[in-house]
Image (cartoon, rainbow, N blue to C red; front, side, top):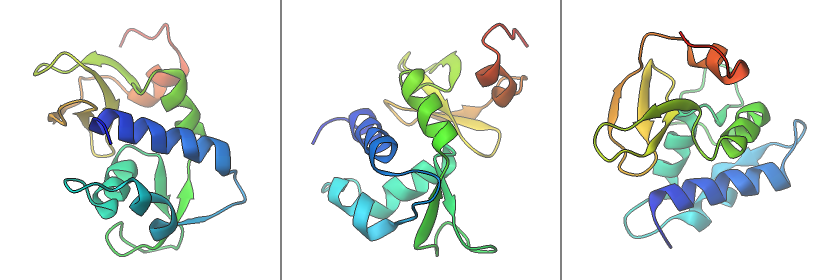
Length: 133
């Protein structure tokens, strides 16, 4: 299908078009159609969870066992507005833009290199483009 960056972007664009705050989504229906020989639908789901696009719908469910998800449309729109980059930093490995990961780390959209976040709050930065940290 294309690079992992294109796959993630096409999924996020589809989520933006098809879903709203009231609609819920099952993993099978959405993400398996984007799977390839190298990337399983479940891997895509876990990645979207890590970058804050989706979260388990039921209280107490872990990302690995959840089958219903809520879509964080604010993060979906931020992802699309910023060209897939929620943080204004570059990957030290390939130079690509990076997106936020849940656990104080970031992951590159091109090569999936993972590292610690720089010492500023990405959520403040995302809302205030003039924030210098």
